[in-house]
Image 1: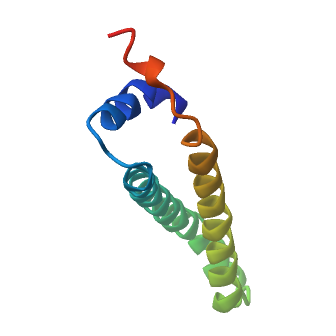
Image 2: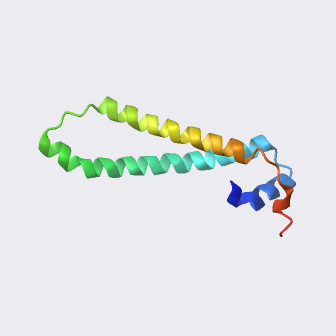
Length: 98
């Protein structure tokens, strides 16, 4: 959020409400989070597949899904908190450098 101060100040100057900007950024970062988590999960499954297949390990798929959802929920809460803190401050100085 802090790296995008100029962009956020421009949206503010154009009349976008804080809630609209918050939802826009939440959607953007949420999609990035979801795609990154899914690609990481697929990569982890590909890396673990030979070991799981050869050793006959009995891994409960429900527990794997629970861990995946817990990681996703924690990361989502971090994104939400970072946006809430980052957008709390209205800085009009972001456009002064332009």
